[in-house]
Length: 244
Image 1 (cartoon, rainbow, N blue to C red):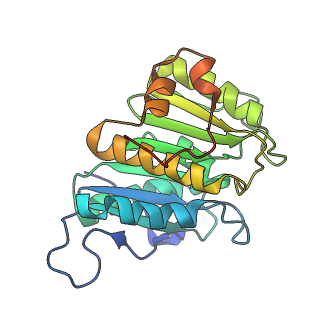
Image 2 (spheres, one colour):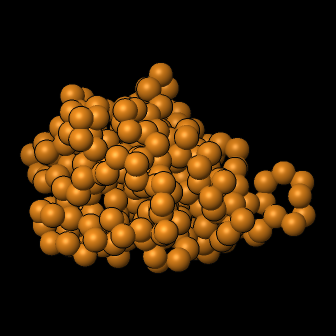
């Protein structure tokens, strides 16, 4: 049984979007949940808001619900992400959970992936340091058994994309279901190619949570050995003919 974190940790779930929202009795039951973990600054939301809207449109009829995790208090973001996963289990039962985070939320998603309800992680421009405070590298064992996608802009001046590549290299050794896409010429906000980033995120989440099927680029990235599957370029126009 999931252990519920005390309210003092400060996190709460935002309003649900997608399945079983509103008063329509024909809405699908909840079959999967995406927890959206925002970045450190509310003035720089990155691609999470358009991703949330796209997921609600694309997955709502299949029973997908999205919740933003509203942070507060002093506890680490990864602890609040684990609390949010506990809350999903309490509300919806045994459904697969995807942690989708941007910036500091991307790091929290990677660190909280070991929660038993989590089946997948989408980390967008995760803010990673070269190592933990004691000098050891970021852990990756918690990613074992999860579907993992990291997306990073090659011109990110805030979070070094090479650090996320090195983390992905280590994660791939512990978990073959790991891939990483590079958004060439884009910065930390992933704004220049936001439509492609959102389409990639939707494709990955729906495949990880429901069908197990992905578009050809994601399938190839997951299957390719390092470094190919960890430096997969995100093609301009991605999403216009997904699964076509």
